[in-house]
Image 1: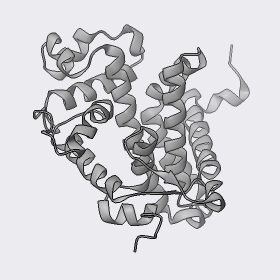
Image 2: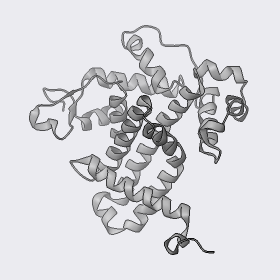
Image 3: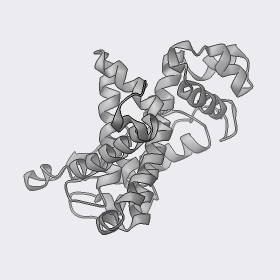
Image 4: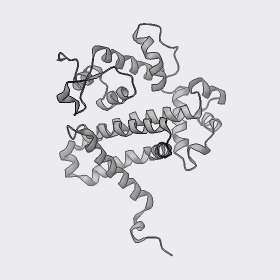
Length: 262
């Protein structure tokens, strides 16, 4: 039952069907109007949510799944939708041009030559659309990269949360750390090229990349750590650090310990 201060996270998840990690991702993206609980709860990062947040989650799901909008686009149109004005015209479904562009961009940006060498023409060709059609959905290659990061963050956070549940929480992770490292390593390996590109931009001092990288890291840490601890970020960071170490060992191979051979 909702408290006098609003809905708890658990209540919001139960009523909306949206995973907790995704709720936190939307909150940090500025899509939900939340307020922290009293001073005794603030240090734990607990938030309360309103009926308006529940309604917003329902609209966000429809805009993403039926309209094919990115989170940045949803942020622009959500206020109007919440006020009952007409939603944007139908864009495409999960197999439409925008989804194909995101998938093609993810694949090409993850390839060895990386983001810088990939052209909009290549992305359009891989997605099966005309080059000019790309700009109907994304203002630039940079905007497309941001949308890829947002989708990858949401997908990876959901994979992290499911994996913790499948392993049996903290007890399961402790009982079979090798299997945990393997599973989380596989998730990180898939995301690694995009995360490295984002991290490099942040390290060079690009403010939008720094903000996005911090949001992505916190989202992933909370997704992995929330089932493990009341202080989820440190717990989740330990999982992520172990997963990154596993991927790096896979990348360099077993010979790295002895150093290069002549």
